[in-house]
Image (tube, rainbow, N blue to C red):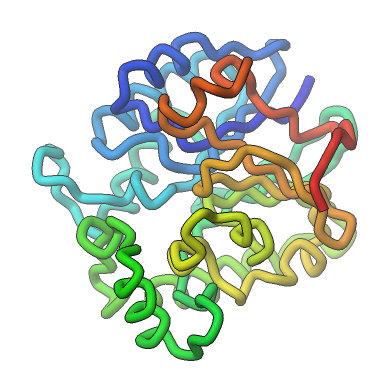
Length: 280
């Protein structure tokens, strides 16, 4: 009986759909944590969540940036917060837990722990060296030819900007985490890393602008995290921060996972913690 995790399924790719079709729990009691980027189209997201909901005892989802894109060919043309609300409604229809639901309590081995899916976005505070403002950081990224597709497809409506939406999400999420019992450990599930350090290995460091927020840098300590699960970077690995394992659990695109032996077959075990090899 385990907490298993995966992210960045990107099921628009046929090879990734085959991977999802092959995912199975080791136990009928296993939970699956999905740390975002199931797909870009609402129909693809529904297909994947339905398949996985039927196999795992509990499925917990938090959105990635691709899930929140509004593509012209998507029959669901809601933007921004309305698209997120649509996906929450879809998950509830399927019986999948979202960041808007009560945090489920894992009572299996190593429990109890509260499993907290977090939707907090990013606010451009993971800035390139030598830049000190959002505007300056974005200008530096553009000079290097690094611009995330979110700038065109992830709409912040009704907020003025993605950073404003992030600040609103930080406020409500922090309040919910603070309301948990002070002696209850947590497993935190976010599409984005909660600390800056994992982004240091990016091939294009400017892309870190779209990878999180400095505001969550102490959440793993403040909220008693036993493990942090994230995706987005497409660099599956484990690192340790203040003694807490941070597990990047992305599948990624076929061109990325094909060279990794066994990657397409593996779900990451998050809990109970096996204290496996990790980078510091």
